Image (cartoon, rainbow, N blue to C red):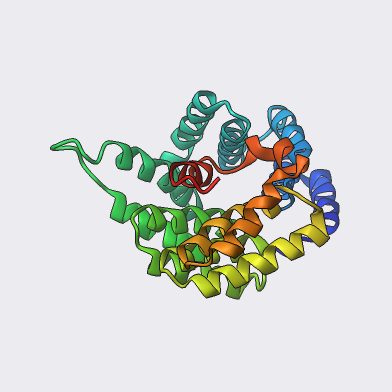
Length: 271
């Protein structure tokens, strides 16, 4: 979470000397993190290839499958991604340790969420939220992997205050983390605290432009600012952000933008 990818890779190489399979998974989790943060799609594709060959067992093999499922989903193979995630969940389900239980809770929550409308269907979503919350507090190595989906679960439930509180918890552990800051801004936006949300996204856009150029997270900032300023009643600033989308660099990365964000802006005729 400190964004020191060079040092992280050095540690992963040392780990591979002790346990090649675990080090292999760790290396590719770093690559997935580089994609999530810097928009490095090449790292995501390399991770997809390498994770298939990591020789692991137990928790780490389940985590390997879990990461493969995420990568497949991000690269447009949603059905294969879902199947891979289910395979990982089956491995996590019977484990006794709390980290495995937390990973399983991510999968199980969304399964229950999908069938929550059915009568007489058991619904353990509240229990899974508690398991994830506990895991995010207890786990020193996996807490970001537990905290981030937990925040989005509360977001989907329109419980933005809890989502904001959890994002701020994450920022206490990883101050000024750029991805967690954007998540915090998303919660502030839904709470109609437009000025605070805009300030975070303006700084995020400037920081990403300097650090990574016009990357995925930079364009996410621009897209979010379009709707934040619009909803705040500042059509001039909203239009200023909208005009940035004429840049050919945006068109190259458009397919990597979050679908829900694009759908919202399109449905409201903001882009």
